[in-house]
Length: 63
Image (cartoon, rainbow, N blue to C red; front, side, top):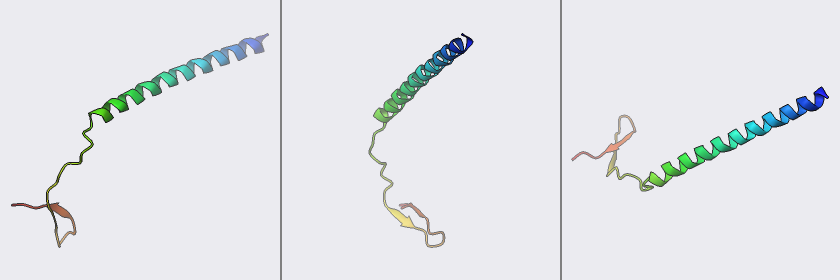
Protein backbone atom coordinates (compact mmCIF):
# COMPACT_ATOMS: atom_id res chain seq x y z
CA UNK A 1 0.00 0.00 0.00
CA UNK A 2 2.82 2.42 0.77
CA UNK A 3 4.24 1.85 -2.71
CA UNK A 4 0.97 2.98 -4.27
CA UNK A 5 0.86 6.10 -2.10
CA UNK A 6 4.50 6.84 -2.92
CA UNK A 7 3.90 6.37 -6.63
CA UNK A 8 0.84 8.63 -6.49
CA UNK A 9 2.85 11.28 -4.66
CA UNK A 10 5.65 11.09 -7.25
CA UNK A 11 3.14 11.27 -10.09
CA UNK A 12 1.42 14.30 -8.55
CA UNK A 13 4.77 16.01 -7.95
CA UNK A 14 5.89 15.27 -11.49
CA UNK A 15 2.68 16.69 -12.91
CA UNK A 16 3.03 19.82 -10.74
CA UNK A 17 6.61 20.35 -11.93
CA UNK A 18 5.57 19.80 -15.55
CA UNK A 19 2.73 22.33 -15.33
CA UNK A 20 4.96 24.94 -13.65
CA UNK A 21 7.66 24.51 -16.29
CA UNK A 22 5.08 24.74 -19.07
CA UNK A 23 3.65 27.95 -17.59
CA UNK A 24 7.13 29.48 -17.12
CA UNK A 25 8.13 28.60 -20.70
CA UNK A 26 4.96 30.30 -21.96
CA UNK A 27 5.85 33.44 -19.97
CA UNK A 28 9.37 33.50 -21.40
CA UNK A 29 8.03 32.96 -24.93
CA UNK A 30 5.56 35.84 -24.50
CA UNK A 31 8.34 38.08 -23.14
CA UNK A 32 10.60 37.28 -26.10
CA UNK A 33 7.73 37.86 -28.54
CA UNK A 34 7.10 41.29 -26.98
CA UNK A 35 10.78 42.20 -27.27
CA UNK A 36 10.87 40.99 -30.86
CA UNK A 37 7.77 43.02 -31.73
CA UNK A 38 9.38 46.18 -30.34
CA UNK A 39 12.60 45.70 -32.29
CA UNK A 40 12.78 47.76 -35.45
CA UNK A 41 14.55 45.12 -37.49
CA UNK A 42 16.36 47.72 -39.59
CA UNK A 43 20.09 47.94 -38.86
CA UNK A 44 21.47 51.30 -37.90
CA UNK A 45 23.41 53.11 -40.60
CA UNK A 46 27.00 53.63 -39.47
CA UNK A 47 27.81 55.82 -42.46
CA UNK A 48 31.01 55.30 -44.37
CA UNK A 49 33.64 53.24 -42.63
CA UNK A 50 37.38 53.76 -42.98
CA UNK A 51 39.95 51.09 -42.17
CA UNK A 52 42.67 52.22 -39.80
CA UNK A 53 45.96 50.99 -41.31
CA UNK A 54 47.70 50.72 -37.92
CA UNK A 55 45.12 48.65 -36.06
CA UNK A 56 43.20 47.12 -38.96
CA UNK A 57 39.91 48.14 -37.36
CA UNK A 58 37.13 50.00 -39.09
CA UNK A 59 35.82 53.27 -37.72
CA UNK A 60 33.20 55.77 -38.89
CA UNK A 61 34.36 58.41 -41.33
CA UNK A 62 34.77 61.77 -39.63
CA UNK A 63 34.02 64.89 -41.48
